[in-house]
Length: 316
Image (cartoon, rainbow, N blue to C red; front, side):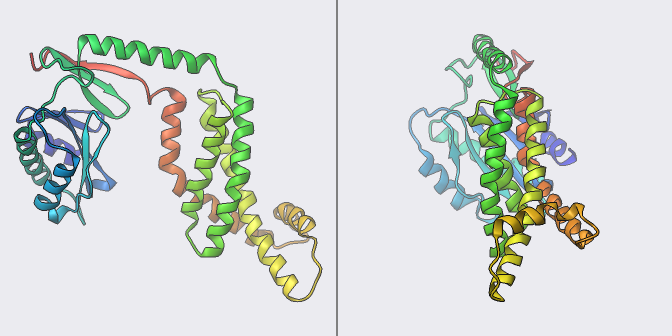
């Protein structure tokens, strides 16, 4: 938070939940620091006035921010966003300078900041929603809150944990395939864990699982089980290839069933080695899926749609 607070001091912005927000030269910004301060993500909430487009914005960033490799800007129709990169840490004063220059460019191109949902520019306050702080007038805030309440009520009254679990299991089964392919391609297991978690989540949602607190528990449980299965599937394929190369006719189904049970049969197998492989798989699966599971947690608790009024009448 020290980096964020220093940035807020340079710009005069306020800070709320790891987001610095405020106006520079009449353009409204959100800024947050990511990856241990090596990146600063910038959101400029603007509407086009007399011209300018994303191509011109990208050309400006490429020409004026070469040393930060900002990459391409993106727009969701409400905000233009880009990332300031650094090999170490983004200096707050440098981020402030970039935003000051960028705000002047936007103003010159006819962009302006208003309520996030309408053209109201007076008597606006701030609404926190899904990791951003939006400028909103009172009318739009109330309408937006009503829509969000309807979404949350629908989540609370529809869906089924049982159906969601079935979908997550199907996603886990499909997730075994890329896990095995990544393993034999020599790719790190963290990527396998991310893909597995994504498949479990998509399966849960497609089967209309309930968006409640149990959602995260089910997805994590399925992720753990199918990480176990995937690690042993790798072992099964390795052994099958070994015995097939020696000329043995191997029933791969029976072999896989035996290997699945092998970690619990210390009298017959080297279980310590198998549990070491499973533990390594679970570690990298957790590492790869950590940030994705944080997203799932927000969704399961309604934080992804929750809104909160944190200020008003700041620019009246």
